[in-house]
Image (cartoon, rainbow, N blue to C red; front, side, top):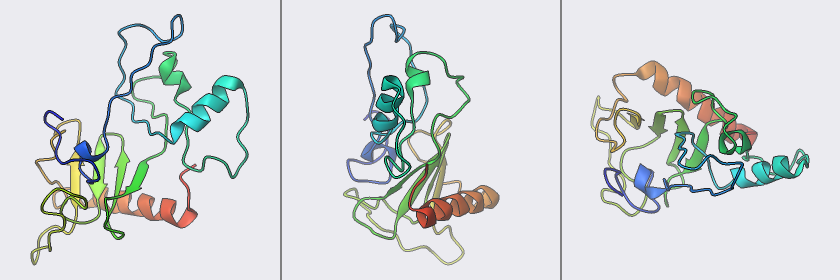
Length: 168
């Protein structure tokens, strides 16, 4: 886990972040790395693109192909997927949305197994968590109160995805 906070099932990074390692001679450059965010759901769209198959509109509603990243045809700053959204741990009301380096968690606490699971907001204090993972991968500095415009933008995107029932 290193500097990552939390454990499996948490909204915090150690709850769901894991390395992805690929070996594909003559396709994936040996020793290459990428900071792109991908998800297990993205394997469907990636394998479909690899095989030249078109996914039906109702298949893989949250799947985005990361084939361009694997074969080195993607720019580092060009996202390969829409924001990543998931329900946090066992709390049905707590969600997280990750867009690039920014991550918004809709409530306070881990939402999973780490304590505190849920924190009641203090009067006038933040009601959620916002982190810039590029600067703070350990999620130690909650920027929720400092960047209200970013919080609002991410909340709106989260709601749009939830209302649509899909991110693709």
